[in-house]
Length: 185
Image 1 (cartoon, rainbow, N blue to C red):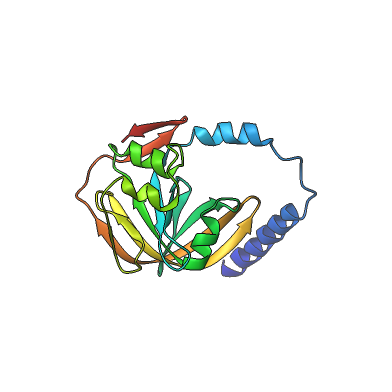
Image 2 (tube, rainbow, N blue to C red):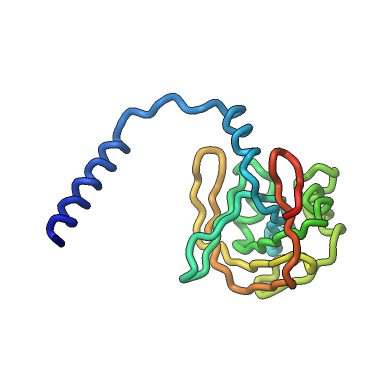
């Protein structure tokens, strides 16, 4: 039975490789894709950094776990963002998951209030953990990380970061972004 499974696995792998080598089809247009993505609910995070490149932060929903050994997360950021070179130089970040009542913090760090870079930190109470990145004291969870790899994909960088410290608050409702609006869950 084991030999049959091995042959079957090799055959499936060859089919997979053939599928990858097919001529690419015309991609979906950006507007249609953004509309579809707006319907995927996601937790709202403020990603922060501080160091030789400066102090900065941005709102993100494109955050997810990669592995638990070592504990690794990924964050997606548009390469044209003013924060991209700051993160590259600092090499650290903190992912602060927002509570349901923190939509104003999300708006500030999304750049919708006119506050930029370190002036965004005038909103909320901040401290630091191991890396020195700003940690929102009222975040549901704060994951303090060191960036270990950056991959460029299309218009964005995917930042892979190892978690070096965690601060958790007691359980409470989280802030979610869905259908272009903040919601609580």
